[in-house]
Amino acid sequence: MENCLFCKITKKELPAETIYEDKNILVFKDIHPKAPVHFLVVPKKHIESINYLEPIDKELMGELLLVAKKIAQDKKLKGYKLVINTGREGGQLIDHLHIHLLGGKPIQMP
Ligand code: 5GP
Ligand code: ZN
Image (tube, rainbow, N blue to C red; front, side, top):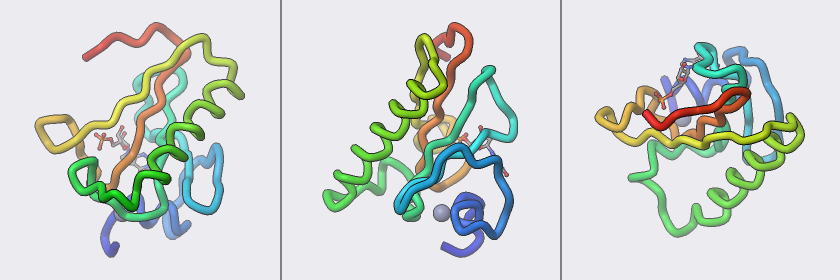
């Protein structure tokens, strides 16, 4: 998707501090961390938000959660919070589906 920041990052057209990569997923550090650990778990496929998910994306969504779990365990987080903002009122600023992985301190609900 042209002019999508996270598409550009997943295609390496823009830099990011990569934590993990596989065929379908890139995980990188959030540029404005809101916790000691703040990663973004991002599918390489452009999906605008949860509102645009299709049944074909079921397996990919499972992969995103498994990758989030693996990274949290690799980083030995005692606990963590996974957040998917959806729509402007839901706090979504980048219109490419992503999971925030937050940890390294007690994370409150907003
Ligand atoms: P949202 O509000 O859409 O759920 O989250 C977008 C996140 O992307 C924000 O936490 C913001 O700090 C992060 N972000 C915005 N621009 C960039 C960027 O250019 N690079 C990285 N690594 N993170 C970004
Ligand atoms: Zn995109």
